[in-house]
Every structure is written in structure tokens, then in C-alpha cells.
Length: 195
Image 1 (cartoon, one colour):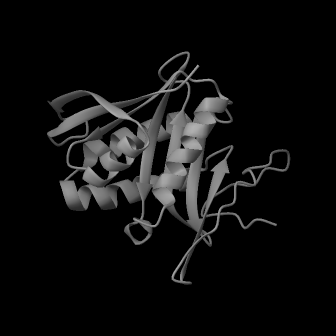
Image 2 (tube, one colour):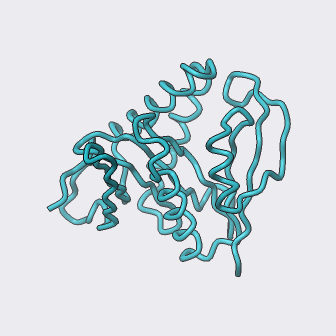
């Protein structure tokens, strides 16, 4: 029996998360697994928002505008689940959520998916989990027959951008902007998938 991660609701008629269990062991101390959710509770939304705020607030000065934006978008995404063309993955350790990544297969229209809310707790970075999450997202998009995957990031996130490029995402748009409340060089990355 799978333990439910932080804030995952149970529902008698739905299997809440698939058996996508991948153990990641590093130095015999760090054990984490990647799970996929078919529905998202308010406490999972809160945890994803808190992880984003802790990281982006500390390192880049993102504040209330960013928090309101991702909270609103995550709530909207959660209300659309279970949606066949959308998926949320969490990285969990015990009952703690330590990372997330979502594919929103609805917001951009037919044949296009958006990769969103990709974050890992600093204690799990550089351990292969980011790579595993992105592979899961790309595989899911191929199964759903998307033509392309896009994501928004900014130029200061060098490690994330390197990971995207490693998976053949290309920067297709770049401009100064403040959609997250702080002026940064916003970048849109695109991955074209084979038909």
C-alpha cells in the first residue's frame, strides 16, 4: 500500500496516484519517489506555492504578485483534474512534498502542452530527480500526442535552463518582463515533438 503524501485526499472511487514509483537513493540517506496525482488537494497547492515562494523569494526577491499568480493558476489547474491531457507529479519523501512538475495540456489549445511548476527542494537538486521529472513529462506528452511543449523561465535560472536544453528544449523568445512581479529576462522554451 502506498503512503499518501502530504495533503493528498483519498477518494473511494478513484485511484489517486498511479504506481509510478521510482526510488532514488543517494549515499543511503536520501530516499524520494515520484508519484503522479489524479486530483490535487488545497494542501498540496499550498505546499507547491510555499516551495516556490521560499526559493524565488529568497534568491530573486519574488513576492506577493508571484504568489498570487501561481496560487490562482494552480487552483485553476487543480479544478480541471482529472483531465486526460494534464498531469501533476510530486517528489515525495515520506509524507513530505519536496518537488513538483505539471503538464497543463489544456491552457494552450490543441496539440500544445505547457510545462509548469517545476521545482525541487535544494536538498534533492543535482541528484537526477529533475531529469527524471522532465523525462516523465516528455513521455506523457508523447503518449497524449502533443506536437510541442512550452515553458516559461528566466535567464537567471542557469541550472534549470541547462536541464531544459539537455532535453532539446530551445529558447524561442526572450524579453525583459515583470509578469512575476520582479523585472527579469523572461524566456520561453519550446520542445517540438515528433508526430
